[in-house]
Each structure stands twice: as C-alpha cells, then as structure tokens.
Image 1 (cartoon, rainbow, N blue to C red):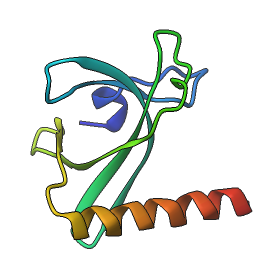
Image 2: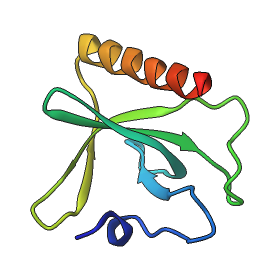
Image 3: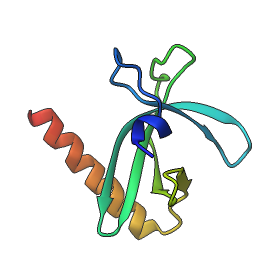
Length: 102
C-alpha cells in the first residue's frame, strides 16, 4: 500500500496529518514532521496541532518508533530506553540543522 493511502495527502498541502491516541486515551492531531531511520529501526516525529492545523503554543514534538506491517498499516511504539531516545533526539536535531542550512 502506498504512503498516500496510509496517510492521505491533499495535493495542495505538503503537511501530512495523523491522529494519535495517547496513553491516557486522549486523541491528539499531529503533523508528521519527518520519518527517518537509525540502523534497522524507523522513527517518526510528530508536531501537535490544533483543529485548524496550526502548531499548538509552546508544544514539543513527539518521537515514536515507527513501522508498517506487511499490508502497509502504520504502527507507533513508545521508545522505552533512555539511550535510544537520546540517540533519536540527537539525529532529529541533526536533520533540523541540515534543513536550516538549506
């Protein structure tokens, strides 16, 4: 299944939005900032947004382990290990720095 089918894309909009269910059961709309890999593991970075797609004030990004099953259905998992999270956060910072330099 193509990414466009998993995460619908508006041809006039480059932002891809998803709804994430938090551990407390609350749902949160997010913009996908990037998906990248470290070794064999993929990670996704999400930015919480309001109902109009605007970033929430003073928000942080959410970083999850990301994978798709054999049918292309996406799945997110929390990062449990502090060292893994630090490595992923560092790589995301590097990606942001590269984009700023462009």
